[in-house]
Length: 280
Image (cartoon, rainbow, N blue to C red; front, side, top):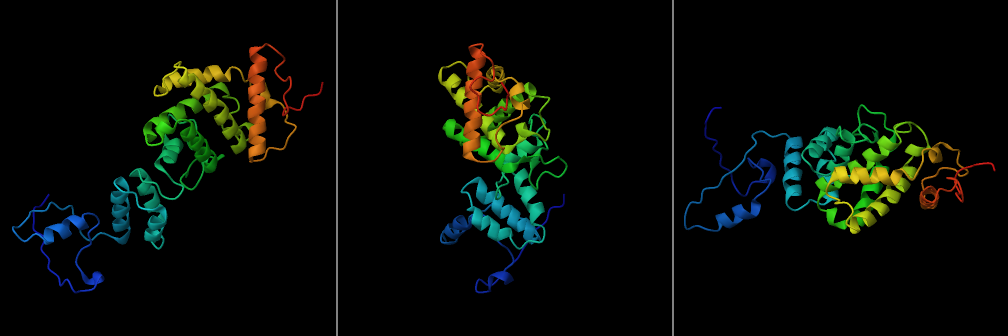
């Protein structure tokens, strides 16, 4: 490291593009200091010399998202005309900043070794995976979890840990079906299973049976829930066309509830189910 001094001066009347520097954050502080003429006030500055336009955009978005979030439309306007917008998106993700539909939580669901969805999400960020599951399926599943466990909305670390714990249990319970092109891995089915599990998990948590902030305990509880849903339900041909809409999702959830009750009461698993196509 070499120590040195950086000096510059400019005419305040010059147009902005002729001035020697841009202030990314701290404009109001400097304005206040400039109005106080009683003494020279030292100011600590972090400076990036000869920063490219991409670097300036990145620093502005990151700094202003860590305190007061910049509106998404403003972020898009800032980077819309950059030469390498995709690279900036990935840098923002790594810095923990949401851009468009690419959030740090989705990044972790796609990347982490602990995630059952690792490299399975169908979105531009996934460069080496099979792109099996629409990103909207994961977004919808997480959104439902936030609705049920509202206190986690601002605690994304806990939210992510619990979400991954739930779905590790699903993957391990149906390992033969996981990551394959089948009805089990479709968006509508993923969200139906997610809602079925989360509804029960909330009741279990409210009864004090499980601490929702302990992922290992959550995973064990979900395994218990899924024991009531035998794999044959997913392997039997269905009498309905699999479509991504609320009617189909609710029909799947209804059958899962009936199926769980059948297993508890030791009835035939398919009794009163509407989806499986079973000849009597």
